[in-house]
Amino acid sequence: MVRKKVKLVWIQNDAARRATFEKRRKGLIKKVSELSTLCDVKACALVFSPYDTAPEIWPQDNQDVMRVLGRFRNMPEMEQSKKMLNQEGFLRNRIGKLHEQLHKLNSENRETKLHKVTDEPVHGWRKAYR
Amino acid sequence: MVRKKVKLVWIQNDAARRATFEKRRKGLIKKVSELSTLCDVKACALVFSPYDTAPEIWPQDNQDVMRVLGRFRNMPEMEQSKKMLNQEGFLRNRIGKLHEQLHKLNSENRETKLHKVTDEPVHGWRKAYR
DNA sequence: AGTACTATCTATAAATC
DNA sequence: TGATTTATAGATAGTAC
Image (tube, rainbow over the protein chains, first blue to last red):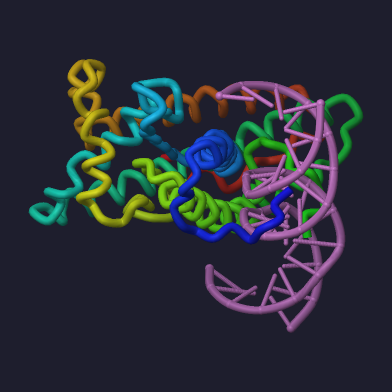
């Protein structure tokens, strides 16, 4: 019942620590997935615990994790090449824009079909569409 | 004020999506850090967004992240997809695919509009479409 | 866009079984 | 130990500036 305000320190009691761990890991994974779907961003979470041999990973699809981690991989060596970083930033930005266009086109498509018969003017999408 | 129960779907409105993203990313990072300190486990979160060139990463200390990712790096699938991990190649490939999707959607869109009575002209997408 | 507010939803600590 | 419950702490969607 959350009787306490949760001091952010290591939980000494073994059982309590494990219980909290299970709950919060679950919550964390949920949050990552929500962030990803709500905002369409690439996100990833890894949790290694003494309780498991394998790490808890999200997303579960390895390919997707690879994609997320792929960019991170070279970061320590990133110093050498600001060019690459800029280049990647540029490309990512471009991807972001294309993605948005796709979503918008998708919406429009749906709207258009929706109003086809009644020939109602379409509201709502125009603003976001520009 | 959380008037709604938050449907877990992509947020279409740009401003709202970004606002939500900022809030939730912050919340996510907090959760990872809390889990780590409370239960003393190695955890890590990465968030790539179209809004930033660099990813949001926790923990901030690169050494720690590397330690967390160390085991993951050795997984066999990692080797398989080395090619895919080539950053620029991957990103460019992605751009290509998005372009394709745009073309396809656009055609479909036109088709639909041809059969619509009012046949509203479409503005805005062309610029980004190139 | 950025900060602040706060009503309401969500996570979860502790209790209980 | 593990599930279920429940009351409170915490997160955050929508609003206002």
